[in-house]
View 1: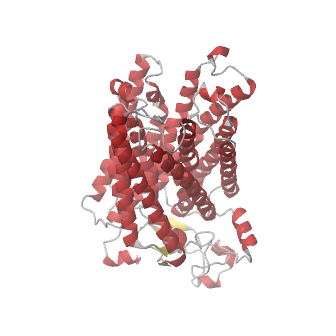
View 2: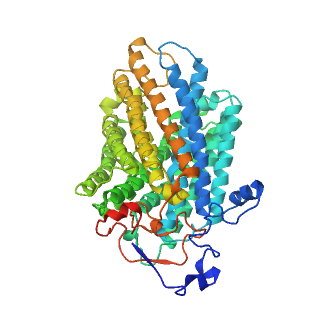
View 3: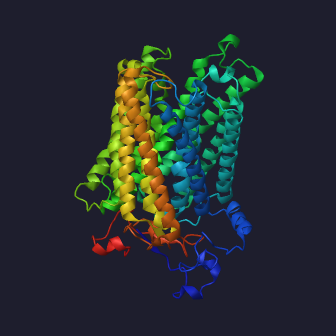
Length: 567
């Protein structure tokens, strides 16, 4: 995809360090993981905490997000253990309410929203653009600090007794219930600024720092997805911030915004909340689409089918996503006309998503598909997300939504879209870019085993919930009628299998980090710019500015040696 401009002498080692843009580092010198050669742990830690290197910031985001993912996973296992039987066993009803609220709040605000944009996106976006860093490196570091500050407020709320409002903070309960709810609201409010900072940074970086010759329609599709995500973050997140601030003000000052006794309207809060939160669904899923586009093309060794359609569909999804929030409120008392309009728009947003599915399938058709670990996660995503998308059609139809609303059918649909979309695609992207990020190769056999375990555990966990929900099993119930016990038991066993698969993946990746074989610069034969850098990349990514001379998926003739990193 790229060629380097001849900006340095033929013998690059004779050029001044500043001409390289990397302060004299070369591919065979210590990577950004240890550059500076700090003496002592305190100096090493300080160098990371004050860094403005997008790669280090991305890795710190990755570590932070995975730690909170582990906490959310533990709470899920805890209440799935309780739900194995119809009667209360291991926790009270109040504890159960706090557990599922904690799980949902952490997964949405601390894990899924920042998972791909802030972690993987921070690492790969400047590399794929041919830039030395993001446009505003200090703002990038500030976004991480703000993320930690928001997380600290949520942790304080949990340690202060927890809260049981559900992750949506619906009024009037969130404005009248006791507990550290205000701290949780301020935590989520603070986290919004981190999302806004990241989105702003990505938009400016993509507009202003593309390599020479890289027009918008020569960008990798991962960048299109991150661009659409950033637009959504920038436009939608302030709405959530204002909503949460209003709820906090009502709790603190008694202002009648959502309280009907004071002239407020509790349904207004739902409108505000879902005007952000449905676009937030696409903040979670659009980066996943970008990852899958990269994985399908590279591991099928074939030019992406329908590049322009995939690119523009990402922006279309981001824009249409602002117009469908009302499908969450079919039973809230809104007019029939509003329901019909929102139902139509919800069906309509499926069109650009279907374009992507057909394009990925067309890319694999006739390609040289390699069934390695990233590709197994890609195929898992396609299967699981297709189930999630098709079951969304039931919830988009008012007549069936009335029956399925607030049942386990919604829980299953949400997880097939969000968990499979964000988490499964993230795992595929992590395995795809792992060699570039850390300079080591993981065990391919263990990678395939882990992908299969997670796929089986995920389906065993959530597919029975479709059946239970369609038969009337309500969600958020601590105790339920015994006729649903078999499906709930199966779902809980599946959650244990899923947890085992995730721990299994963590173990072999940690082993690869410290004991893995050195990775070549281009283990997959990719032709986007990040594969032209050293492994791991030097501090400022490139010795000199690259120039874009062809498209991001113009693969050379298939060569057996490509699998060994030769290009």
